[in-house]
Image 1 (tube, one colour):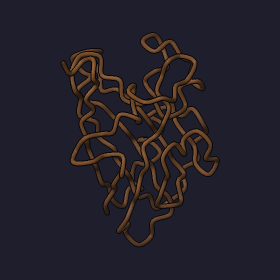
Image 2 (spheres, one colour):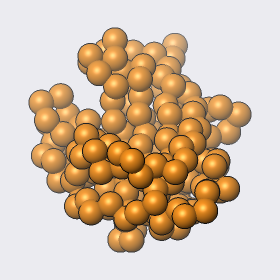
Image 3 (cartoon, helix red, strand yellow):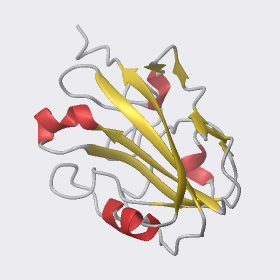
Length: 170
C-alpha cells in the first residue's frame, strides 16, 4: 500500500498546510488540511484510517503531537481542505485539546496544521487499510483508534515531510 500527498513536494510540506497558510480556527490553529491519496490497498480493505503526527514535538512538549486523526474513510483520495467540510468520515481529537492547546475535545476534532515552535519538524502521515468499519464517533481519542484497529490492520503506509516555519527556521 502507498500513501501520498501533493501537499508534500520534494519532502517539504507546503506553507498553506500549517501556520504559514491563510485559514485558521478562532483559536489560531491552522485548519487547511493536506490532500491525501491512497493506492495499492490489499484485498479485503473495507475502510482507511489516518494519523498525522510530529515526533519532533517530544523535546518541546514531552510527547508526540497529534495533528490529525481520521477514521471510517472509504475512498482513496482526499482533496486539499476536505477536513473542513467532508461528512463521509469521522475525525478524532488532536493535541490542541486540553491544557496545552486550550481547546475542548470537539473543538480539536479536526485537522491541526503544522506549527513547530522551535525549529523545522518532520511530520508523518500514516494510513491504515482496515478489514472493517470502526465504530468511532467524532472526537475519538488516538488510543480509541488504536484499540479499535487492533487485529484489523491489513496494511500501513507512511509519507513524511518537513515543515519549515519562516520564523523558527532562521
